[in-house]
Each structure stands twice: as C-alpha cells, then as structure tokens.
Length: 235
Image (tube, rainbow, N blue to C red; front, side, top):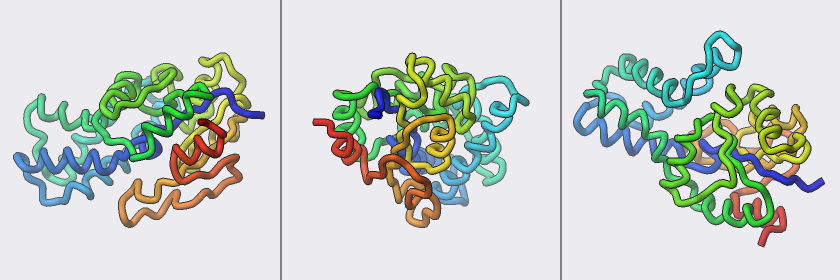
C-alpha cells in the first residue's frame, strides 16, 4: 500500500548538522579560544545527543526540549575541553546553532516535490520552534511539524512514532519514516511504518563509520530526497 504521509527525520537526513555546528563553534572560538578543533567538539556535542534523551525516554526525567538538553551538554563539553562559553547571550547564540543548520543540497527540491503527492511532516527529536527555524533558515516547508513536545518523548521510543501517526489520524501502516539512520527506521518499522533509507555518507565527516549503507529490509533506499521523489513517482 502506498503511504499517505512521509515523516522525516531532520538532523542528518534533511540538514547537515556537522558543518553548521562546526561553523558556529569556529566563530565562537575566535573570541573564546579552544585547544580542540571545532570539528572534534561538534562530534562530541552530537555524541551527547542520544544519552541525554534517555532519561526522558525511560521516564526518569520529565519532558524537556532539545534546547535544554543541548545547553546542558554544551556546558559539560566546555568544562571537558576547557573553553569559555562567554556571557549568557553568547552561550544562547551557540546553543541555538542547532537552529541554523544548512540543509543538504537536495533537501529543498526533494521536499517540495514530495509534498505534491504526500503529507510531509517533520518527525524530529527537535521541538517545534527549532523545526520552524530550520525550515525558515533553509527555505523549505512542511505540511505539519510533529515536534518532540507533541509526542512527549524522543525517538526511538515506539510511542514517538505511534503518537505521530495518531496526530495525523493515520494508522502506522499509512506512514513512511524517511531517515538516514538505520536505528530510526528499525524502530519505525517495528510499530508498522514503511521505511525509506536516505544515504548520507558524509553526515559524520570523512571518517564516518555508521549508516554508510542500509542494514535493514527497508522499503526504499535512495541517495537523496530528489531520488526519493522519483522513486515514489512524484512529478
């Protein structure tokens, strides 16, 4: 059965988080020097992403948005790598680097083509404000944004996918998860979603070792979002 809705992972699938975070860390380090290169700090910041969400997923912590988690992780890294965050305004600016990430070259055209035939929704661990700012920054748009505060948990918690489908009034089998991460697709598939793997071999930089290829029995595997639009017969 053809899906009615495509639900998109955003960080790494639609936007290139590593180049954006590296860019803004490099700017910050011009006035608040670090002995560690911005790429390494960007990778370390991203590495804190899943562990910081686990207390929310497990119920040990109430829901807090990704800005809160990113801010906490940044403070931790500033101590570990011994760099100054500066005053509150500079700390907030750097934390919100995640709102200013550039998209992959195919994302805008791909999303716009896919929207002609499918409901296209942001299904990110980012909250609504973050998803809106990324869309405005890159000049793409969604039919609906299913921010983490809508589902009140973080992927890959099964409830994140089930509640997202319910928000659209759809059964999971009418939804397709679009992601560059095999773990995300496996979790979505386990609750009944169709799956589309988008290969982003440079998401983690030149030494990327994960998600270079599809590792599951996904419904579609593509090299870009424009390729996905072609595979799904969008004009």
